[in-house]
Image (cartoon, rainbow, N blue to C red):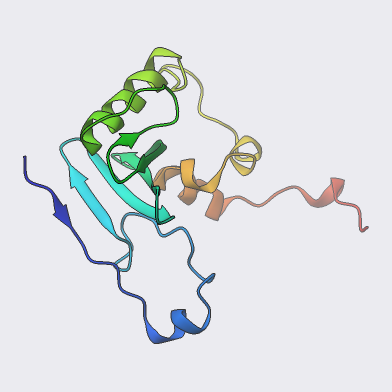
Amino acid sequence: MAHTINSFSLKEDQLDNPLEKILLPPTDPNAEVQEIPGYKLVYADGACPRNYRVYTDDSMIGVIFQYITHWSNGVDSLRYAKSVDAAVGLDEFMTMTGYFTATTEQPLTEEELLDKEFDLLTSEEWERLKRYVPETSDLVAA
């Protein structure tokens, strides 16, 4: 199984302000991405363990961890030899617990999307939020 790794590189201005882009999306040219069949692992942070966000298509399904001797996914107590096994275990757990909603359910409202973690938003949901204009009659200055 071939793994491709895009090297992580920071631009000069990011070295001066390292917190500017702390969680890069998998499409960012500066993101360290490992592509394995069915998944994209995007380096988030850490040295040991290294933390990777796991994506299937455009959706983030969770986080896996790379230790010196093994991988883990945080949802079970298994130690996996390969990153793909940890990602599959995470995916199966999330599916089994019903974390993902069925496609027949109503889409979330824009207000509900605003409560969702930004890493979990799909590109379609981002587009909806870009066009969303909240009703201002309920806003109160603090």
